[in-house]
Image (cartoon, rainbow, N blue to C red; front, side, top):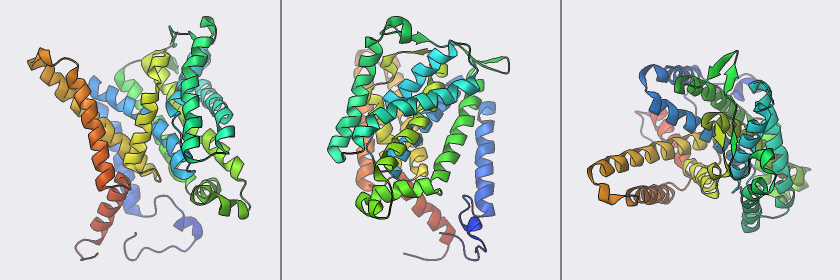
Length: 349
C-alpha cells in the first residue's frame, strides 16, 4: 500500500524495489545504523550479530527454495556444511577469498542438484524425506572419505581470511565482512521476486500443473530453486568456516536445519522480510534466554544443564505461540503495522 499521490509513469518506476523517497531514506538510515553498531558495541554483540548475518544468508536461500518454489528443504544445514568444507579445502590451496566464495557456492549448488533430481518428482511428505536423506548422508560421506581429504571425524582447520594483505580476525572486522555479504544476499533475494525467474518459481509453487500448461518447465524450475537456494547456503558456509576457523560435521546437524526452517516459518516463508524478522526474533530471543540461564546458574549451581534445556523448551513454545496467533508469520504483522502507520490518523478496517 502506497501513500496517496504516488503514481508511476513507466513500468520500470513501478517495478522499482524502493518506490518512494521515504523508503530509500529509511533503508539508507538502516544501513548507516548497521555500519555504526561496532562503534557502540562490544565483542560479544558483534560476534552474535556476525553469526546472525550468516544465519540470515542461509535462511534467505531457504526462502528461495521453500517460500518461492514451495519445495520443502530439511537439508539446508548440510548444504551450509558443504560450503564450509569446500572453503576449508580451497583456502588451503592459497586461493583468495573472492575466488573461494563463488567456488564454494557453485560446489554447494551442484551437490544440491543431486538431491533435487529425485525431489523434483515428489511432493509433500516424500519431498521432506528426500531432503532429509541429504542431511543424513552429509556426515556419512564426510566420515567415509579418507581423512586427508576432508578431515573425517577430526575436522579441518581453515586458513585465516586475508583481504588486501590484512587478516580478518577481530569481531569488528568480521562483522563488517559478513555485513557486506548479508546486504548482497538480501538485495538478491528481494530482486528475485521482480525477475522472470522468481515469477516462474512462484507459479510452480501456486499450481505446478497450471504452470506446466502455461509452458513452464516445472522440473527445471524445481531443480533451479534448489540450486539457487544452495548458492546462498554455500556463501553462508564459507563465512561460517572463516568465522569458526575449524569445521567439523557437528556444526551442521539436522537440528540446525530444523531451526533454519523454523526461523523462516515464524517470519513468513513467502517474503524476504519474513526471513529477516524470523532470524532476528529467534536470535534475540535465544540469546536472551541464554543470558537468563547463565545468570540463574551463577546464583544456583544445582540447576545444572536443566536450565539450558528449559531455554530450548521456551524457545520452541514461543515459536508455537507465534504460529498460533500469527500463522502467516511476522512479515504479515509487519505489513499490517506499516499500513496502519501510513493510514494514521484516518480510521480504517
